[in-house]
Image 1 (cartoon, rainbow, N blue to C red):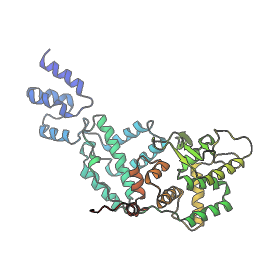
Image 2 (image 1 turned 180 degrees about the vertical axis):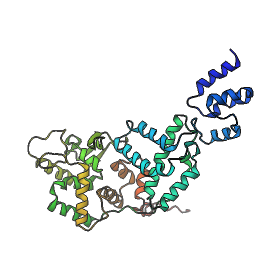
Image 3 (image 1 turned 90 degrees about the vertical axis):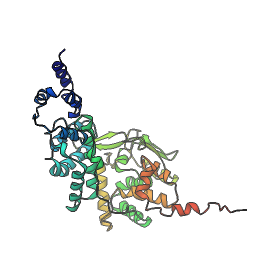
Length: 370
């Protein structure tokens, strides 16, 4: 086989995917064939070889004309059937509203950490929240990881970009008297929501976990319930039942004896036979309570009680905060909330128990020379 034919075969093997660096060996050894190679690749013969080498080290795609907005459209199509619909919808909102309008016309090969960092800083100056910016960073980093897997990039520039520092906002915890006010008001004006709101305060469960709970997940004799399922938004706008996203999300939550009695009384208040497959939290007409409705009603209650900054998720924070203030070990709190690690729990609630270290050392023995 002639040298020219061998090169042609090699180029056929590498042409659709890898970047220019795969051809360095051939370019250096066979300078006489440069015109043929450049013609095959569709680039000018006057191409700067040093630029090719530099670009290959900094993420140049094999298609140097690909703009980020076009790639992100491909990325969304790729992700549509591989993640939960709600997650995909959030990706699309961030891409359409923030990432593509600011970075979309830049070629994917020209995006670097400095460009990304400058955009994040400009977004903050424009009034975009730090949480939104960090979500954009996460989506962009994930998209670039896919690009690396497809040989469109050789490194991930988003991993080296810097997001603005988040303000030190403390999680809002409800005091005992505020929780009692909420429950008392619920009894008077939204009594059908009392069981689910009470359970939220008692367990720290998420609204989607509460609404998906079935009687088969509850053992009142042992005073325990099991989080085996959750709800996620479907493409048609409805709800689809899924297993928790993480291994730690599927968990056992112990109940106090008093609250187990409360749930038993609630169970016995239902008319007709109760089966293990039936949802725990339903209206008196038998229809299940949906997550969005819980959020809406809880917000109505908070506004009526002049607590405008309180949301349903504060029930979860308040449950965790009360346990930590009681001196319960953070590991137990982590397990009840279903966090993936104790570090996640402490990062969120570190301000709640600032005296844990001081209390821990109180009974530490004093060692002195004899």
